[in-house]
Image (cartoon, rainbow, N blue to C red; front, top):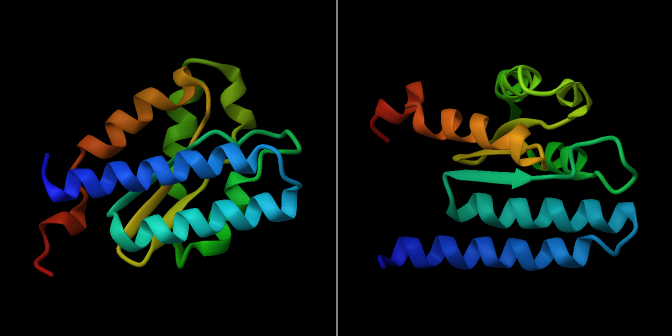
Length: 136
């Protein structure tokens, strides 16, 4: 396994561990932990995907926490995910996920349900973005 792979796995495990902590906290503290985890991941990753927490429940704080740390929004991505999910379930209308850029990282909230998030993730991550061909 390359160093990049190990680093990515470590960061994902770190975020997963934080998710377990976030579930038992009140909303303001949960918002802060999610925002902090996304900020840390965005420093080392080109793509940060979150799952869940995009619904209407009181513990669904991912969109607010994500928006807090974004430098620029990319609403078209979240709209495309909702549109794709809507073809499968009317519950897609209840998703509040957001997307945007923090530093050089693209941050995307995916719905927590496997049917709502699996297909858009594949499409989003396998298409080549216009900026990927530019020299940096």
